[in-house]
Each structure stands twice: as structure tokens, then as C-alpha cells.
Image (cartoon, rainbow, N blue to C red; front, side, top):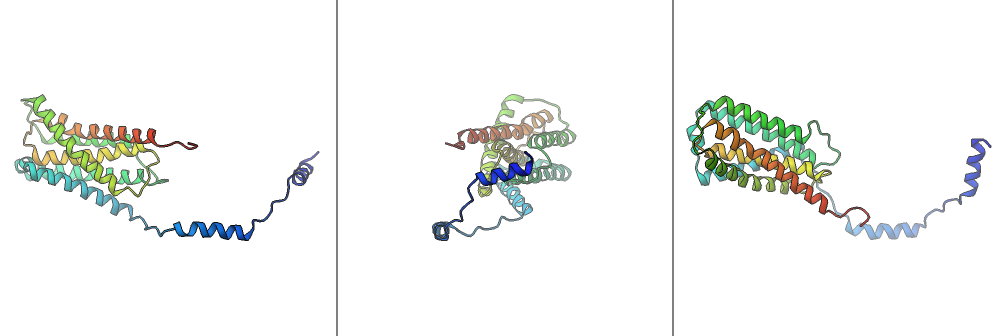
Length: 235
């Protein structure tokens, strides 16, 4: 028996499909129509990312305005230009990555872990080049205070960023949480650079920079929890 004969045998064994009753199709359409609503198109990627950066900047400025711009006042013009340009650029890349994470089928050029690593290394490089005071006075006590302060500002910045992207959908909540936490962490570091007058190199390199990976880790854990608590298919 050849292939043509097998195909012919299968066709004869399978009952011919019947056309759907037009009345049934009409009833289905009438039942769906009332629930349909027009959907607003998403804004361009660059505009959404800009909104995220501005929201994080607002959190940083609000925190520094309450605590004082002591660090900003102590910096010279070159320090301000390099530090805040670097933070703004890294926040922009993190915002772009966060938008991609919340957009299904979006093309990711850099993984969240790679972006986090590169951002942390970039901050360390900038801070190491600018701050040359190698004293370590009150390294632990003052450092933990700065870490907590930066982290407490990273939380509202990350939550605000998530709220702005609530219309999106994270295919991988862990990765989305990591990069969202990283974006919030950069806002926390910006607040510290505006406020903290402790320019000891070890203090800034360890405690200020640590805000970014700590916030990213918390974001990843939250995303992982959301993923594990979501109902699985078939339940």
C-alpha cells in the first residue's frame, strides 16, 4: 500500500467536518461583543523608559530634599558631572531593560544578570576614580546606615516603576523583578550621592554600591515568589 492509498483510506474513515450553524456563530459573537473594550496603544519604548528614569529621579530628589543635599554641596563640578551622568546613563539602560522585560516577545540584547554586573562594575570604576580618601572611620556603623537609607529609597522607586508598567506582562517575573529592583537601587544610590557627605573611598565603594545588587536581589526574590504563587495551567 502506497502513501496515496493510505491518505485515501484515512479520508474515507474520517467523517466530513460539518459547517457550524450560522445561528451558533451569531450567538457567540453577541456574547463576546459586550465585553470588548478599545485598548490604548502602549507609548514608545523610549518614552516609557524616560518616564521610569524621571520617576526614580523624583524619589531620589525627594529623599535628598528631606535629608539635605550635603553630598552634592561637597562635590566639585567635575565630581557632580561624572557621578550623576553615570547614574543617569545606568538608570536609562535599566529602564530600557525593565520595559523589555514587561513586554512579551521583546528582544533582549543583554541579560538582566549581565546588566547588573556591568552596572555595578561601572559604579565601582567611577567611584574609585573620584574618591581618594582611604580612611575607614566608623566603617561599619555609618556604612550600614547608608545601605539601609539607600535601600529604603530603592523600594518606593522600584514600586513606582512597576506601577508605571502595570499594563505590561512579565514572562519571566524573576528577571523582571531583578532589573526592576536594580532600577530602584540606582535611585537609592543617587539619593545617597546627593545626601551623604562621607567621601571615604571604602565607604562609597562598599556601602553605596551595595544598594544596587541588594535591591536587585530583593526584586528577583519578589518576582520569584509571585511566579510560584501564580496559579498554574490546568488548575
